[in-house]
Image (cartoon, rainbow, N blue to C red):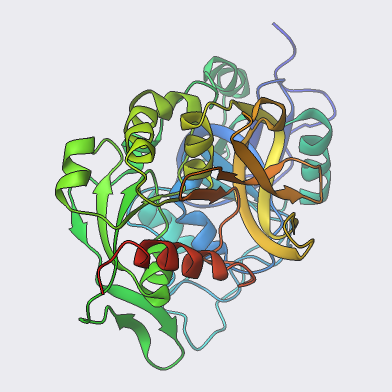
Length: 393
C-alpha cells in the first residue's frame, strides 16, 4: 500500500482536523462543527455568499465542499436561509477560522449549527492549493475528520476514502427526496416581511417531482404564477396524473442521473407522450435529456458556484448563473429532435435543451438564485405561460 501519510505533510501542532484523499494526500487543519469522520466526493464552490444555502442544498449529498472564498461563517446562521430539511453536504473546508457572527439576521454561529447537524468543518486550509488540485486531478473521494484530541488513524482514513465507491452509479435522489405529497404554500422572501404565502387565486397547477429540491425553486414557481404540489422522487405516473397537472417540474438533486433514471425516465417519457408541459433543472435537466434519448457523463471537476456564464443560443445573451452539478448531458448524444439551447462559456458543456414538437425544456443551472444571480427567473415565467396555454379561460 502507498504511504498513507506523506513525509511532506506531518501533523502540525494544534491540528484537530484532517482531510485525507483517496490517493493518500493529507491536508491538516483545525476542526470545527461536529466531531467524527465523513466520506464523500471533494469538490469546490466559488460563491462569495450563501454558504448556508450551499450546505443545505440536497444536491450536495455525499459531498465535501471546499469554499474558495476565504471568509465563511462571518454572517452566522439564520432561520430563513435553509434550502431543505434533509441533509446536504457532509462537510466543509475553509481558509480562515470562523469568526463570531456579525449580521442583523444572524440567529446562531456556523460552528454550533454544523455540530447540531452532524456536519464537519475544517479551517486553516490553503483552499487555493486544494482547488487547484481538484482542477488538475479531478474531484477525488475523500474523508474529512475532526477529533478534538488530534488523534487520527491516517492509514485507516485513506482506506476508507479508497473503498468508497464514488458518485458514479449512485442513486441519491430517493434518499434525499421527501416521502409524502405536499401542497406548497410559501412564496419568495423580502426584507422585513420574510417569506410570502401562496395566493389563493386560480392558477395553473405544477406538479413538482422532488429529486432533492431546493425550497426556493418552489417559491419561484409560486412567484411566477403557479400553484405547486410536490411529490416524492419515486412517485408513479398514476399518482402524478391523478393530481391533474397543467405541467410537471423536474427538480435538482444529487447523484448519477443514469441511476435515478431507472425509475424517473419511464415516468418522464409517458408525460412527454401525453404532451404535458415539462420543465427541468440540474438533475431534472439530465433526466429529461435521458428520457429524450440522450446520454449523460461524469464531469472531471463539475460546476459549482454562483458566477457561471452561460450563453443562450437563441439570441446570444449571456446569463450569469448558479450551478451545482458533477454530471452533464453529452452534447454529442443529443437526438435530432432535441435542440441545445444554452452552453457553458467556461467549457462548452451543455446547459440547456428543448424538445422539438413538445412543450418541454430544461437547463443545467439553478435559476432560483439561492444563492446566486437572478438573471434566469424568466424560465419560471416561460413555464407558467406554457402551462396557461392548456388551462381553460
